[in-house]
Image (tube, rainbow, N blue to C red; front, side):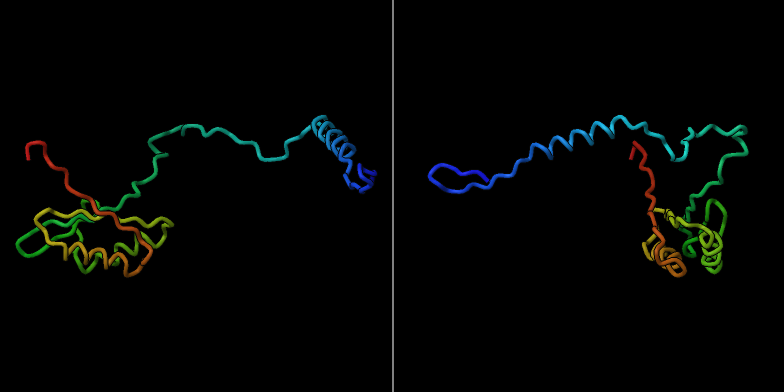
Length: 141
């Protein structure tokens, strides 16, 4: 403490030694040799045989076609009946971590069959994400 003007006491902390110690510690840590102890990162290499290394197509598309009797189903271009749709979806998605289903329907079809497919998909997997695919419009339309 120092006696200030007018006889009042003044309490000021001297931070110079603390700053000196901080600078010494920074210099010490900069001079210490660093050694890396982590895992070595390797750049992914292309597969030796690309024909065998390609994963199977993970996209599942349920397509609804309008017919006079109602809607027919195709799963990845393979015909499926309404009775076997739920079991086929369960077989496909029971071993997958990601559950995404795409539904494509004819433009002349009502939304009711599309909603039935979505309900069947959510029956066993409520967290399944469903994407609706729209048909491409020709430039002349």
